[in-house]
Length: 596
Image (cartoon, rainbow, N blue to C red; front, side, top):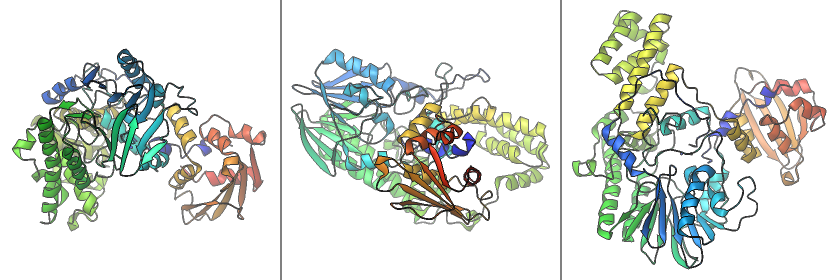
């Protein structure tokens, strides 16, 4: 029985947002080959790096310290009479360890509580470090972990995602770009994501959850935890009453907000985000401590800054909707909506992370979906067909290549990029033309990347240029595959199996398979019934057996070990760990062959 038959659906497991910024860094460390000249940088983005460097711990007020520059996010230490509270724990054990060392220079008091402001991995994966336990064995925890009630469900619910989502996340964060040669400057809201294929994840499940508001005294500190959905639906802010300090989570940072993330997410609810900022403004904080970028102090300054921030979000939302109601499509609106000058120049609204144009497109899609409203866009030509027509209009592929080169010389890089890409998929183009077009596309991507104020935009362009050059192949690391499989529920594993079905291989097949998992913790629903028909896979979780063409008895841990290549399925079958109770080994192999 071939291992590949049991691994065909792994890639969908990898990027769940470990839990969306998904995003998580799952590939191997990589040093780019010196095949291109140093890429220029937009001066504002280059200067923005100083927001996070050097890495340091800042005292906001006595008893409140924030660690900045050690990872993508900040970690905040609240010091009480007898103990400490940590708010957000960074993206890995490796990122958290130096922060704890710095915090211990300030206080040796025991850490009694951790607060997650939301589910993003750069806020939760260093928790075992602060809890003082081994990340490989977190069964006994001496700290309480607080979060919103939906955070736990979001973390448990693994989404059906694909290699594409992984790839896009790695492009956005520039995870494979070199810092040494200047390709990677920063990640917009932090210096860099500290998580690679060798990194350890130290996540702890929250055990103290709430819905709207939680007043709690921890370590003698009077804290108010408030649900404030914005960048995520489970976002909470922490109000430290005695010092009037507000921990803003990701609802505010020194960059235009990411209303839509190009790594691939649903559009964030702009109206909801504005409402949360109004809640924050209404507290009249003396100190504002975001989970990305530096803290602010001064009641009036904070109030005015939060006002500008919420006004920018509302402006983009309202003007997008206004132009939608005038019948304009997303392309037209994206090129028309610009912030008013006083907001556009505001130091906390520079487009280092999100962009107005991307936000407009996201808001449009959030309200109306993918269709622009113009019948022209109902059934657009496939790219290769369009490419053939463009080549014909230009007088052939060679002439189109010349037009692309001319556009490049005129610094019309977007148009040159579109023409070069068209030639790469044009059926009429010979290998020589395709080779030149490929090189030209990479240069266009680098020139466009060099012009970006947004770190996300720069990172995306430059990473895709390396992929286009054949210097980089984005692949998840084995240790993260293993971790994803081990932490995924059986429900999720079978959901991924369903979306991995190859319709051509399953053509005309009508067959059923029953998995019987004999684990003690599977007593309520030990059976999974799979039915392939009409080139789809229906999966049912059952408490009792159901007649099937093939019946397999197996332990869920053995199943996961087979998926993770830790156990050879042939050996497992020979050892009696895989028991085919009905049907044959060949029948099982044939069934699994339909998944790719």
